[in-house]
Length: 525
Ligand code: GLN
Image (cartoon, rainbow, N blue to C red; front, top):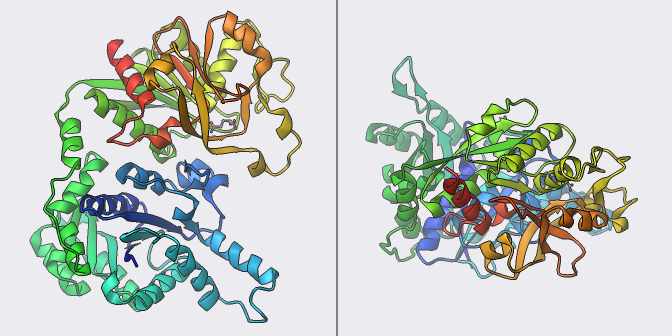
């Protein structure tokens, strides 16, 4: 049976509970423990797949094709385990399962209620995590005090009783604001949110204090007193420049030792691998500037994995990556002159398309390293058709269903399917790379597997004319029918991929495409 750590949040949302949970998971992994980690989201969508990135940030896609919360991206970047559909549970999913079971007559005449039926289903989904694991970390989304989060908190409270308090640890993340006019850090919001948590029957064992600055000893003492935890269990989590510093900040205050002691596990004094990552990030002075041309740039979380993968590419090349967030709806062309590379990420819908096409023309004509991901690759094809093949009205049928030149189109077998989710290519698919191409050299592998999230594909009717004009189809599905990667023959680095390589990049294992892209940007300086 595994040990369980439940991470709750108080005071505010967006405190970086996901990064904190992932950091703790990685420190425990460094202790030689097998760790799994799960996110509970209190909203009623069954999954975030249908939510706008403006609402919820990026949708993170797992190997098994689940559309999940972006925190799962943090988990995968911090620990050595692939997440799956089961690692993200939403209230919508819980209610859906219970209501389905009720309709099937599964409750044998009982009145179906939040307690025990919803809470039982939550506990069942949590317990699915522990197979082959020493520790399961469960991050409870939302903020203590929210109505929606109550069934989740009640379920984890019950679970702590069932498992026995010696197998369970509660970590509460709070916010300790620095009030400038008073020149002081204030503990009152923390006191109140712990009070709220205790009213539900949960006494935290560790308080993780997010703050702009380090929490001094005196304030830790005060928080310990008011929240009934040991002072050594009040951990300071100040703002950091790079999220990969978080595990080190926590380790320095002994959080891993504290957890091991709590569970009665032997503590090993190991050097953290994060030391090396942070060292590289801190010590390099060289910088590359990348224009990320997207529709959702006002909410940077919409491109979380792309931004992190660029940083990983920087780590691999020992340079800092500065991202210039360029809105595809309104930008001046000279923005692109000053950057070292251009990246057009994935997206849905027509808004901002013309701006992205303009950026791609700029990158192609000026021989700037240019990276197109998913929609970005599709637009590389539209741009090429319009401006090189002179098919002026070329388009994707996503944006113009009646275009005379549908270079990007829905596959024949998917036409007519009404349910939007039903037509998406989701999750990991194999791709065969063509030897002697740029991408073949970058991966040094013939068969690769990458994650997808899209509906449209390159239209094979146009393959010949593209090839004759200088496009290389350097990656295809194993049956040769689907275009996975394109590149330009006469360009230093102009590569588009139908999949999302950003989802598989980790700080310790930078994705080859991002590593190569940053290297090309450096060479062009
Ligand atoms: N909208 C495009 C499609 O559905 C691209 C999707 C994406 O970039 N993830 O195919």
